[in-house]
Image 1 (cartoon, rainbow, N blue to C red):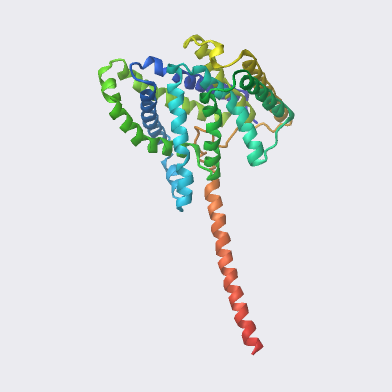
Image 2 (image 1 turned 120 degrees about the vertical axis):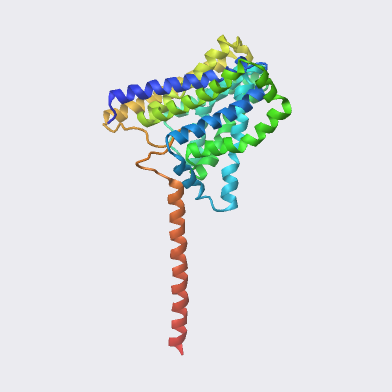
Length: 356
């Protein structure tokens, strides 16, 4: 059972991580005259450097290479690489949106993402949805439907955020890719693209000539690394329901920053009714998570969350690599099948000899 000290530490780490991720939302403003696209490119490079340093400090390279060795066929490598452009597009939109008047649209996408993921889990993996989760999905659908009827459309930015991430997670789950391994490979594959983009658009020369970028660029990488580290701490110390509930803080922080720092009005991102429905839906989901947490605690089954999250490492003591287990099972099955075929052939030969 988790101690109250562990829960307090995990809660603080989760809040701090979500706040740091939301601060990255504003770096496009701080790093002008770089464009939003250039800032996104620099963020990918800084994230890669930070992640390499983090994996090296924690001595986790063996887990990364162990998984990559399990990818054998071209089909597996294709499925492994396919999500990379999706993540690249999401990073670009996260940095490009705030400086181009789409801060609230990006925020709305992150508000809707947890609801979309619940529905995806229900229909793709037959996961159970509670009554409160169904109610939350319905409330969000009513809010979105109202805006579509009222204005005839919904922002493409919002749709890209909330509908773009589910395919990414589905493809990653299909191969049971460890989160850090997937993120490290994505950033590595995106690096040649962003290097060409920065060179062709003058991003390197602008960074070299602008003094404040000399400390903002390392700060961008440092914030990314610290946010990822705090997320790992939170995911290892908190139960599933509480960790999931605290993840809703990031869109709340993004919303506040869009209204205050970016000076956007609510009407720019959608109607007040739609926001009210989505906030109500998230409140229902938080209540559902809280009830689940209390039930687990009441039944004395509260435990730390050991499954890897988006930015976590597998446990050193108990590395649960489902991908490797699946391959081993498949190999055993094929070996048994070959032996069975040999036995069948020998049986047929014996039958022919006896018949003579």
